[in-house]
Length: 368
Image (cartoon, rainbow, N blue to C red; front, side, top):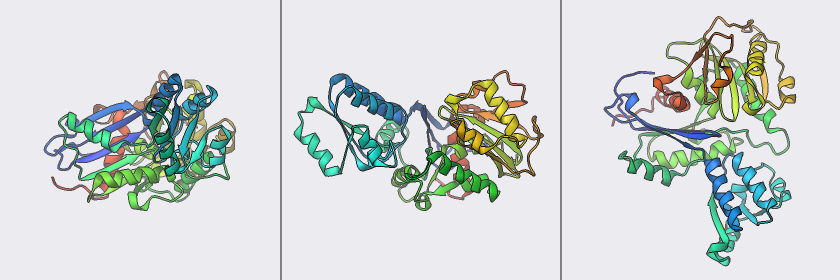
């Protein structure tokens, strides 16, 4: 990625399981002088709001667009276990499960927008908590940028969220990995794993919700969305390098990608919480050698593993093995020849740099 002076105001937001990472480039400034924020992820913020309502014994009304689950789902279950009411609109409830009957089975009441509003009107203010859903609070982000002296006006907007895809009748882990399988089979360029907001695949419902916010923030400018996996991996890939093993050890998922000529030749994905350092190293070695099967990974609680047989090589690989992600410390002390990526001096913004790279490659950068 060029280190020259910026010409555009490009907003990139990478929404993870632990943090949301924000990058705003500023015209006339080098990329290192961009506005950067690393803040708690929306699912953790939402979980804290639900937990506060639980402590007060309030009814929770959860409404807004679909968002990621995780910490907020655990808080919802704890709220119900404590004997308190939890009301969610259909779009917000989809944050917890594709099949809304699963959410109802937990004890939550799933209603339309009108019914949710009626609950808020009927109950005394001190008896109810109005908890908004959504992976990106656009008004709050714009207010925060304004307070920092950064005008919230953008030439382009790119957002990454992790999406397992709408799959009420099958394992969402299987569906998510099927997208990677297609990328390997077609040897797709990594940059093709980013979507123009208007072209977001319908089954990627969480990404579609993020695309709507990105489009609104972009105004007349272009909007781009991607899964957090490709965003981080693309941000870690150095300019001019086509062959590499890229490893993103995130708070939620660990995703490994084998690039050949800048194209996807292999992928391994697992849940970080189920891995330790030696186990991850062993899996990477077996994956690169073509000895790690998807069914084994899935049975172990992960997503899958796939590599083009023509590209499989015993570790250590000939190509550089580049590691990024907030949990990259799992590989500290590994005997693999690792390079720990910190693009532009900031590892936590790797996903944002991947989004920025994709925006620029599509020719959507605009003069200030």
